[in-house]
Amino acid sequence: MLNDLANRVLTAGINVMGDPVTLTRGGQTFDIKGIFQETYKAIDPETGFPVTTLQPVVSINRTDITTEPKVGDVVVVRGTNYRVRDLQSDGHTGIHLMLQRTSARV
Image (cartoon, rainbow, N blue to C red; front, side, top):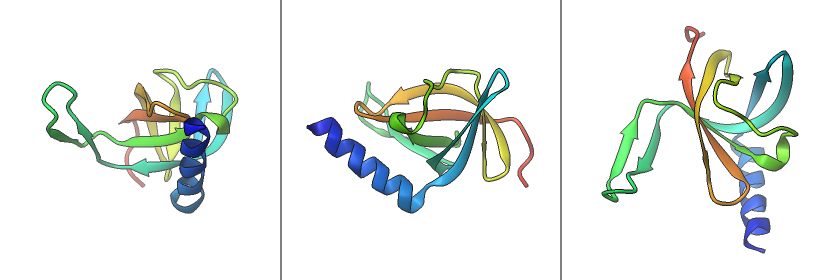
């Protein structure tokens, strides 16, 4: 039940604030929507203090894609190319793709 509620909240957020995202792996392309952030604030699990990083992140819903994203996948969002550096589950149906920019901003 909690996963269902979390999925509904994430879906609503993506529908309202989501950007088109293209994920590519080995010539296979997946078009989805995700919530993109150029900077990402997280909590350090060791200290509990907020940590701000310049690392871009796109949050997607696992139910919106037919394959599990992997480190090294290519992501295009807002006309800029990124590489997936890390994946972090939100504990429910969402995945945060931690990105590294690989092309100049447009």
